[in-house]
Image (cartoon, rainbow, N blue to C red):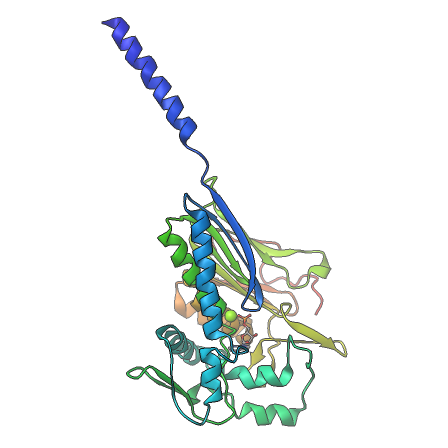
Length: 345
Ligand code: AMP
Ligand code: MG
């Protein structure tokens, strides 16, 4: 009897050893592509990680084709071509994103405004024909920048830009939306641990394969000061989105002209040099990071304070760092909050 018990015990131990030997580390898939004018990287873990990453990129490519204002075949280009002419019927996704954009235009008092397209074209940031326009030129173009002149018809699902020459640009929200969609695709393939990076948009899904939180670094906007990062945030199931004046810019006569415009002045916004938003919806965080970048530290903190479900880390041109809102309890700041550091303009 005792012998049988011993045998069973040995067999059990052997089975446990064999099973633990079978439990392999989750399969990693990693891929980088240039899409939506930026480098997109996905690292995913799971038994179907390869197929998951493949499908997530296919989805992001589809969205890029739909929403790229520079592609004459896109829906956004069609809306712009018909400005002042007629309403254009669009896909549910483009419609939803425009509805969301308008909601946040109201909330941010027009700091976020997708009708900035004529300003983007005038300044030519990120293109060869960049130049600094005159105040007159800016004022002319500003007549076309007003989100209240977008007419949405939810029944017909149409978009109408009511003034000829108007144009929309989803550059401030599309990457975030694409990251959200990529995350949903990964989930369908049972991926619970992944990192999606789309320009300044990051989705940290689950935790790392070693069970630790992802550690997301927020870039220092002026690395020439010797600091590569301004903060590090341990993350689990959150999205972290940064707008910065270092992403697309040119320097003329010692002035930095970048790609985020203040719709009230028609000039690159100058109250912040970096705005990061942490939340659970990347399209929303993307809109908010652009909006906060325009609003500045004071009004930006007030806006985040109203939302409860998002947090923000901001840096002023004097390199003062401010934080507000949720998801930031573990934030590791390189500088003390509110203290001026050594970043140059
Ligand atoms: P982001 O890097 O997310 O802040 O987005 C910047 C991009 O959004 C620019 O390249 C423009 O295409 C567009 N954009 C610039 N200024 C604004 C603004 N005030 N509101 C909405 N979109 C903007
Ligand atoms: Mg944005």
